[in-house]
Length: 267
Length: 113
Image 1 (tube, rainbow over the protein chains, first blue to last red):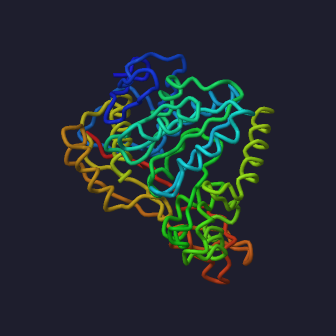
Image 2 (image 1 turned 135 degrees about the vertical axis):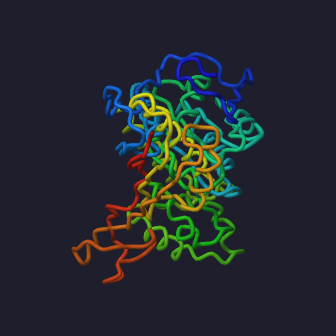
Image 3 (image 1 turned 90 degrees about the horizontal axis):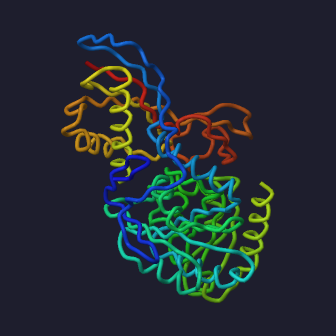
């Protein structure tokens, strides 16, 4: 049971680098601005009556996301939510990015997976801070879990925070975590029509990283067609072609990260 | 299967509203679900029955009002209806569309006692 926000822990579990625990600790950012009391009429109990609600089903998640966003803004933490299907090379791309950037920027990572701390361990091997959220039966990270993970992780002010979401191109699209941008990673070993098959995610993302481009000579993947499909569902999506393995294209990605981080510092 | 999480979100709202608006049972829940939202109505119905068990909304009826996806076509300069996010304009085929309705997932009203 969470002391401040009253959450029951459910299946999600945050696994920190120094201690493993269900979230049962207090924290200094509050989660109190919940759903607004729309009507607070005096009791007028009828056997049956109609009550107007007009509330977003994701309203609660969105409020937690706003708390996170305010926190990131206050501490000038530039946060990206990395989403993809399993096996797109998200973690490899992330570890490579960290290796190339850690001398210049303070970086930390929240890892989401259904089970295991394997990914957080891979991240920590690069020398940066990471916490693992195991979602248990859940198929996505939510803003409330991220709020707790931030307490455990304590990212530095003026830093870069990566949230690696659960490998799933469906559910994470609906859940705002308070990030600056969703970044969708698609690898060329997948189908080029994934943007059409999973349009919600490609519509929610601001950037698409097309990964494993070193494998293009060996696979039937039409890059131009893929980009055209992505732009059908999101005409504004920015596309970068990269290979985490060979490093091809990473310079542009790093340049974008550094420039965006600088903009976040301005506030 | 994030529809289960959505149903848990619905239950939270019902419990909170029960306190504020003084009711103990929910008999019907009306949701407004856009056709372009990432919700599958059948999965939502299944999750709803499971999540509401043992709650103030056990055996409540779920009514889903589906809302058409609408967009502004920059090429045609007019409002159009689309079935899917990846659809082009039904009039001119262009994909430069600004979606402006059909993404909602809202609890609209309740019948309570």
